[in-house]
Image (cartoon, rainbow, N blue to C red):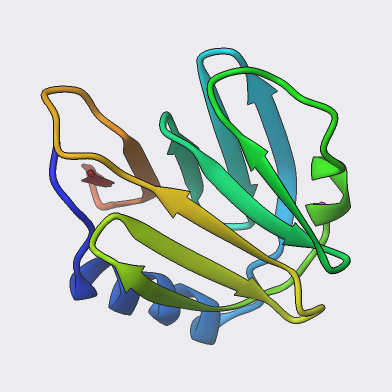
Length: 125
């Protein structure tokens, strides 16, 4: 689809500032990497990089032995755009995740936010 932009960073930081957004669950599968926060979900179909307890890990289209569960209950503090292809979410603990997107005909990342009235709110990259 498209590359990341400042709009998604502003939207994520709005959620992070509004109330506590901690990781409720992580779902690893061969088809995607899903992060469920309190009020929204992120579905990642490209690579996800993480810094957990000072070590680097990568998810790339298949489950692996990284300690992804350690992200559970972590409080998200802010989103940062590292590049148009890489969005970082930093946690209060000092851990972070980098979500990758690609320009292609397929969705790389889907942000699924709470509905507004009868409209579904999604950002697709």
